[in-house]
Image 1: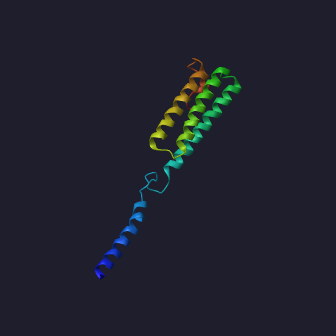
Image 2: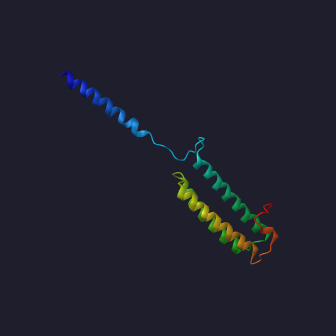
Image 3: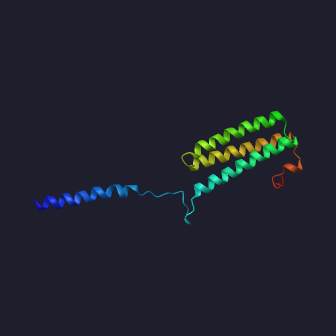
Length: 132
């Protein structure tokens, strides 16, 4: 009887400890300094989206984009932004970060192409000139 009670006590302590050990999971989103990389990538993507939105609006206001070009770019921007909100709901994976970055880069390229309207020597559109 005594052996049965001891074995039941050991078994119950093992069963009670199992859920606690199963809860630990190594989170790869933190770098070696303890910074959450997912959080910073989310902020970076938000800043890039905001910057691109502002550039589209300012170019439309200045007349550098026609009304139809601005509407088309704004719709494409909205699609990228909606994709970002969908991805962000459960946290951004590495694939989702890369996908968003490709979409933002593609939209930025289309914006620059529409803005220059076939002019390749437009000084205001050089990559190094970010005054506007």
